Amino acid sequence: MKLFRNIFKEISGNYNNYTLENRIFNLACIISIVFILGTIVINIVTNLFPLTILMAIIGEIFLVFLYYQSRVKHRFKLSTILFIIFGYLLSIITWFNSGGSEGPMIIVVLYHSIVALIITDEKYHFVIGFVSISICIALYSVEYFFPSTIDPYPSRHIRYLDYSSTFTLIYICIVFILSAVKKNYKYERYRVEKQREEISLQNKLISKQYKNLENQDLIKIKIFSIIAHDLRGPLTSLQGLLNLLNEKLISPEDFNALSIELTERVDQNMQLLDNLLYWSNTQMLGQRISPLNINIYPMVESFFQLLKPEADNKKISLINNVASDASAYADPNMIKVVIRNLLSNAIKFTHKTGRIVVNTRRTPDKLIIIIEDNGIGMSKEHQQKLFSMDHFSTVGTANEVGTGLGLILAKDFVERNGGRIWVDSVLGQGSRFSISVPINMQYSLNLTENMNSTTEKTDS
Image 1 (tube, rainbow, N blue to C red):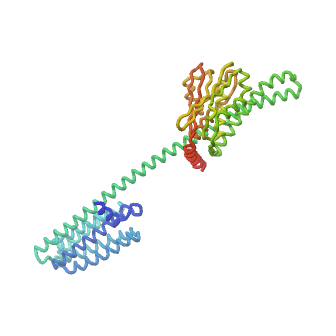
Image 2 (cartoon, rainbow, N blue to C red; image 1 turned 60 degrees about the vertical axis):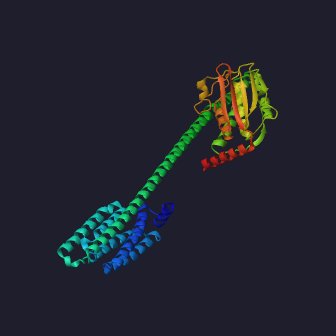
Image 3 (cartoon, helix red, strand yellow; image 1 turned 30 degrees about the vertical axis):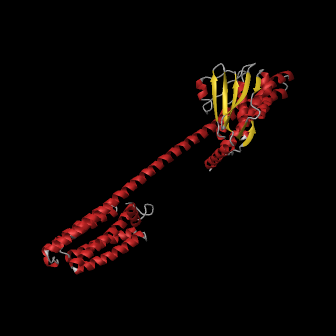
């Protein structure tokens, strides 16, 4: 059966280069060639109607020509028109030379009409039906009024032999054609369903891209609001303070007192500017990930030294419990931004005389960095919005201000390096932020290639 299907597929043509009608026509040509060959053999054996044999041979040659034009030259429309016209002409001529209404030619006309209806467009069906009926009526009428135009069968036995053999061959041809139509219909339906699935997947992808664009718009709005509010405020205060000093409306002592608070605000804005710089590089310029083997202990220690003045102001203890050999394979610049933001937030939300502890834990393929404080903690509702653009920052224990951008940036950078960030917090008792980063070079490289290729596709 598989060989049989492959033969028919080769005869009719493949699904990609030929339409359904074209494939049916090619198959009908081969089936008709076999049918006419059978009638030639029957007529030769029975020594019946020599002119009919001649017409059958001409039809055989013409069908081979039409099949070549359709299957090889891809001239389907021309082949269809010639097939319909020649089929009717051959049927009319053969009618008068093979017994007329007593013979099987009316079945041949019906077979020809069925094939013509299958292979032509629906708008031509009425014309084909009208022509077929008109030809049948005309042939019966001519035979009725002019019976001498019909060559009768030499005997009743030969008539039944010709009729039964032709009917059998026509029946087999129709079965093959209808089977091919059904099979091709199933394939076309399968292809349509496949296209529908692809369209559905494309719609989902478009919807996802649309949501990404919406998210990018939210990011831009967030950044612009930060620039408009959080950056402009301290600069305006600094400008006003300098104007007062220049116009000698404020004493140097008052200026020194105000400058301390203003310096803290400017320092916070410097961190904000750093975050915005990294954010713009990753979100707008498509910064690539460049993972390296990094030692976590000295990185944490360097940030403790950097943030020590802020911690000393609130008498917060900074404890580095990171193992000296704790290492990860990730982009060092991104991990630095993440740890610095988490430590700054911990200091911001820890009470005076509190403590902040940094630990690490190792799994088979990840290093988990844990930053824990005994600060104000947060509610479950606050935790759910913590890493989204819907999150708004809150004031610290010493009225420190922020933007909420640091945690969003941290989440993005950790995920870009194949890790994860999460928080465990109890309101009033403190928070524990955990980030996981790869320790396996091959794992990180595979993930980095995927992330970088995704970034390039997004940029393009």
